[in-house]
Image 1 (spheres, rainbow, N blue to C red):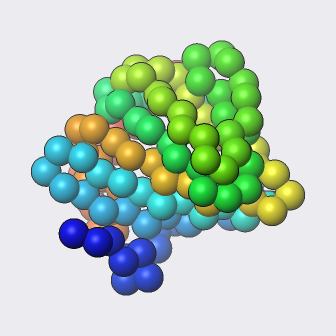
Image 2 (cartoon, one colour; image 1 turned 90 degrees about the vertical axis):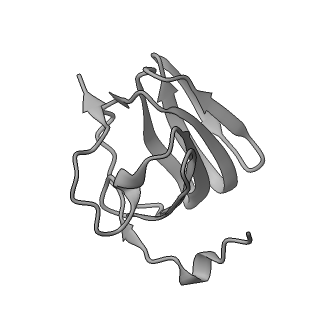
Length: 122
């Protein structure tokens, strides 16, 4: 099945200046994140029981994963183990576009979700 992102509604991201679109199957979910260059970052890490992949499409995003800080660029693939403390903490001058893939699926990222978030903050 081809996902047409033009037909997936945007929802607010985790921070001002970031928009998300999400899809969810039975066992896996994906989110497309578009972050503006002037997005606000608080450097607070979070964690969850899902494994996560981040696939960079354009721009640059600065990440923290378990106290290691690094930049992800187009074509990079970043793995977040379940339980890892992580956060996006900045973007480059053109912002960033990337995909986040979660297993098991995260329906909490879909529009209209009224259940609890799986995110945990220290």
